[in-house]
Length: 283
Length: 109
Image 1: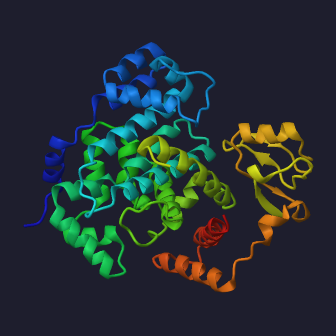
Image 2: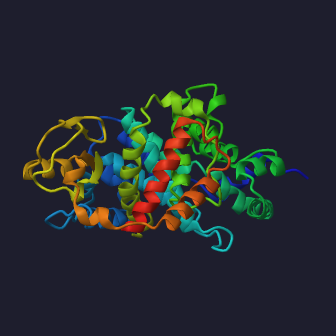
């Protein structure tokens, strides 16, 4: 029997609910009237998270001369927006930590996702987008559909991985043949259920086919290009051997000069190390 | 013309292109001779690399030669990974070149 994407997503929702704290925090920082006190209260609801926030604020990266001992100070040091990205990232990493290492190397998977998130944020900054955190979120979550497959349909996921290992095919193409849909559709369906912003959902949905997005091409196009850059430089691995096919329309829609690529890569290299350190606790 | 990482810059080097921060904010102009303050500013604004004259380039970095065999092997590997892409497209071409540069540089370090 063919798999039903709806049913898979309904089933994964039972185990993978986005922690309320991540949603609450990102909603709160979008309200200009939110004070650090309110944010502190949200973070403090989750004591593990609160400890992590303090650890990050006191880490060598910020090199602050005295000890940061309150969440409110930590939020000031790290910055609300960056903290929101860290909270979202840590929440999803935590959620899928039980996938066995022999199925997919989760550290490599997140290294790749963090690279796409960071590259998308850098590209968005070059475009002077207002809300670059959205691009980070979309990049981070672009392949989450692959994890859903591993959790809910491991047999199919392994079949797809094996076929890709033996052939020269791209994974999302094989997924469409085997399942009738690919990981971008599954991921977008889950994010929609999580009530993430519409443009984040569509960026994930169209990250392999930004050209056919009916709405804005910039968000999916940014993730598309960020994905290709991250694959080219082999930051982590999502299980895909090859660099996905570029949709030139997506790159052109970003309106960026080809010369920025070199600086984007330099920045990505530095910021990726930082972000991996924050999120995975690794250097 | 040579690209150099900000961390490798030294006082007295001359910029041969304008420098902007990652958000496109103009920081320093072409022709500026770097002093201690400039270096601090570049770091503080998150600039990663700038362009300077070839003769300003520190020698030790440049002198590490990568053998042609290794270079070719890297290039071959990168090309393989781009097999699903049309190499004639400008973005793909540039990304292939940049990827090879990236891996060669990593090897140097």
